[in-house]
Amino acid sequence: MKKLLLPLLFLFLFILESLYVQYVPDDLFGGNKIIAPHFLFAACVFLTIFVGQKQGIIYGAVFGLLFDVVYVEIIGIYFFLYPFVCYLASKMLNILQSNFLVSIIITIVAIALLEVGVYEMDHLINVTDMDFMNFLNLRFYPTLILNTLFVIIAGYPLRRLFEKHSEALRAE
Image 1: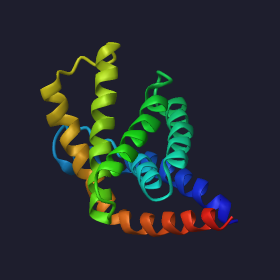
Image 2: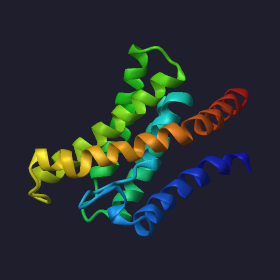
Image 3: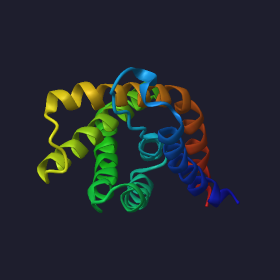
Image 4: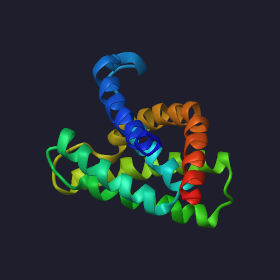
C-alpha cells in the first residue's frame, strides 16, 4: 500500500490542476491573466530534492508525457522539460545548502524555468504569437504567484512525506 501512495499523490495533483483550471474563475486574479497551475511539477521538484534525482526524473518523465498526451497538442514539450528542469534543480541543490527555505526557492526557480521553457518552445514552433513582455505580464507573473502560494502551503507536508518515503527506500 505504501508503494502506491506516491503515484496516487501525483495522480491526485495531476487531477487537481485540471480541477483548478476548470472551477476557479478566470478573473479571480484580475482581468485577462493566464494562470497555469504547476502543482504536479512542484511535487516532482520536491521529490527530486528530498528523495533523489533518479526518482524525480522518472516521475517527471512519466507525468510530463501524461501531461502532453492529455492537455497539449504537441507531444514532447513537457515530456522533455519536466525531467530536464528536475535535473537542473538537483544540480542547483548540489551548489546550495540543503534546507527547507532553499528547497522552496529552488522549486519556484524551477517553475519559472519551466514556464519560460514552454513559452520559448511554443514561440519557436509558432504555437504562440505573444511577445515576451506580454508573456511576462499576462502569464509568467500570475503563474509564479499562484505556484509560490502552493509551494509555501503544500511544501512542508510534501517534504515530510518525501522524507518518509526516502527513509523507506533506504530501509529496503
